Length: 307
Image (cartoon, rainbow, N blue to C red; front, side, top):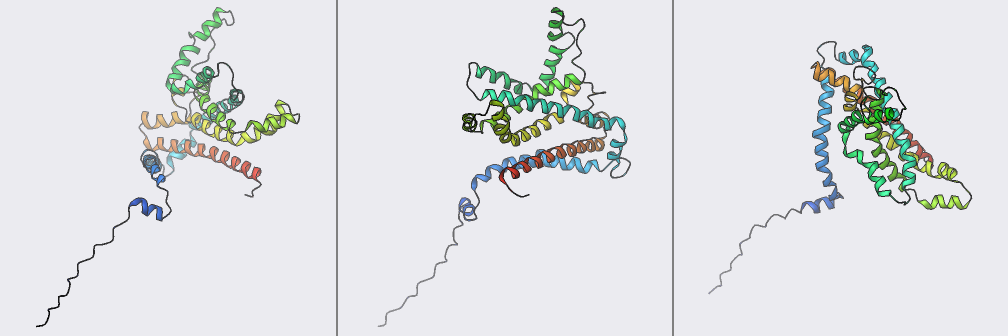
């Protein structure tokens, strides 16, 4: 009697389990925290990149004049060209005043003193107002019948109201009031990064306050000031509500943003409005690029690098 030999039946092997996403990212050397940037990147594409690219291609589709017809129309019109000067004449002085005023105030706010929190709140409160409310406040306070002119009249300092609104002065005041808090916060953050021991060491060697500020604090602070100036310049260069509400939109405060607004939403020439906006963007980026290049040269000079 022979024993029957049985051959075991082969069972199909299951496919290897795919590793989890975090393991695959780790194997490739990708930090998972970078995934947190994805929502912001999608928002940037949807809210900035697509509208910008759409407006760019629309600016090359004028009703007449060829591909560059709307750009030629802008530069051939003296009133439109003047808007470039009007924009720079507001943005640059406002940025210089905001950054310049933020330096001594930030320098003083580094130290503790009575009422520091109240002073900080007063300096930062304008951020919560916005440009429209700031413009409304300027009209109520600095207008012909505002509190400022009433006070001057009661004190006998002015026989007639000072014209501080509906002109260049009103817009400049609005840009200073709304832009100074940002300049101050940025300057204060850069200044706080400079260790006080550097100035104390210079003081022990006999350096006075001005010498310490000029030779130690200011050189270390200057790259940060250029960044602060760039951001405040962008805010001021894009001036629109205050130029309409407390300025002279048909005269000295006819900035590029108003030119683009009138072309697109008053004359319904969207191609011209987009062309005006592109010109505004190029001018803004040119200034930012020049400031970034100057900042880069400062870093290379401080570190002894070669560009």
